[in-house]
Amino acid sequence: MAEEKKLFKVTIDNITIEVEPGTSILQAARMIGGDIVPPTMCYYSKLKNTGGYCRTCMVKVAAGSTADPRPMPKLVASCRTNVMDGMIVENITNPAVLEARKGVVEFLLINHPLDCPVCDQAGECDLQDLSYAHGTEGSRFEFRKRTFERIDLGPYIQLHMTRCILCYRCVHTANQVAGQREHGVLDRGDHAQIATYIRESLDSEFIGNVIDVCPVGALTDRTFRFKNRVWFTKPVEAHRDCPTCKGKVRLWMRGDDVLRVTGRKDQWGEVEDWICNDCRFEKKKVSDWVIEGPTTVNRHSVISQGHYTGIKKPGETFEPLMHRKPKLLMDIHAVSNVNKVDLNNIPGPATGKTFNGDPLSMGNNPTDVKEGVGRNMAGTDSTNPDTP
Amino acid sequence: MQALTNRKQQVERKPMTVWEKLYLPSIFKGMGITFSHLFKKKPTINYPEEQRPFSSVFRGLHILNRDEEGREKCTACGLCALSCPAEAITMEAAERQPGEEHLYKEEKYAAKYEINMLRCIFCGLCEEACPKDAIYLSQTFAPANYGRKGFIYNKEDLLIPDPNTDPEGYEKAKGDIGKNIK
Image 1 (cartoon, each protein chain N blue to C red):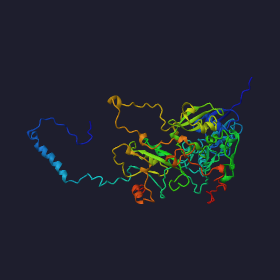
Image 2: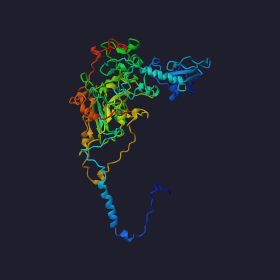
Image 3: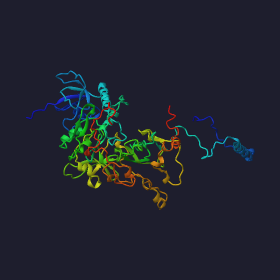
């Protein structure tokens, strides 16, 4: 007779669930789902050893277990704390947790530049969502924020260290998914930065996944840089026969143009399958893909704007009635100057030249790490006025 | 049923009297009212020589703002286009290159920016949405045009004059935007 597996009974915000031993509080909360799931910035269930850095998932443990029902003295990080039998956890029912989370958001935003109007991640940024949901209206930080120059990590990935919140997700991705790691966190404290050694670019086949795991806009897709805003593109599920990865991706389309390819993210913002660089950066034609259908986007997400479904367009009434074509019609595409240049032809950001006669010219980054130019060698110090 | 006003009168369907059948007294009475208006104050003005002042909250033609150094403020974040209920705004972004810092304020700028004034309903939501103080609804309206083509305003049409080269035009275009805020 198979031995009965002992399940732990845990209560999170007055909802009780039975989970296997070794489950973290966060995973138990995700099994329940809904509003009681603590937000995460650094924890990523698809990667090992993540979590514990950002402190946004802090919860109150009101009773440790049935055997020892004393509460834990301080708030604990739910991603790194395993459940015990009879544990009682308070997340949104405890005002102290919400207050602490507000403080954590303020800490995360201390050095964040808040350049969301420029940032390509805006609209699908975890930090943006987090600060809208849990943050305060203003910041009390009135000193210089630390800044870095942006760096190209290889031809496809752009590192904008100023926006980084040091969640280490990309480091773990490079270790566990890409197989080889050429970047890491250098320096410490306020100086800590994600960086490569000079002249090293990231060229593993799966390194593009660091873009997907990045919760902020620190690592972005250079082939999509400034091409469009996320919410004006339409997410579509597609797949292709890829020799290196599963080839199950999400295309971000505008009309018939594939502007960006990413992995499919689930409701926790985590990718379902890692995809290779070839799928992500090179296959930007509809003919490369078998399209499965539009992605269901959460109604409350900005990405769902303007993506009407089930439209019934009214038929043209003029011609059947008048038996001739209308004489005074203006075709907006004949007048408009927008969308004259096919931005999909260039693998980088457009510049003024791109729109003025040279449709293939693109912006190149003045700080190219391969050339060793512009790397912020001095580190950056918010107290030192000489650093950029 | 209760009357809405106290001026309600029952319609009389009696046959007209001789005095009423003459019609002329009523005509003179009506003409008297008409001619009395000749001596009253004219409510019309001679546009375009004379123009009415607009209210300070009037929402007219859009302007794309510059900062005091004359750099374009717009970063092509797309929030105006997102908020636009008439979907009148389109834009294309470009990256600022080294040497263009005096032209554009931010790392990204709008290389193309178009407002279709035929679609625009002048609701002012773009102005509300703009995080960079870059778009304002000014106190003029779109001038009349014979063709529809003339109502597709591109970036050059919308940009406020440069305060360095044309300070008068800049002040004029700006009007009292931001000045009467209490």
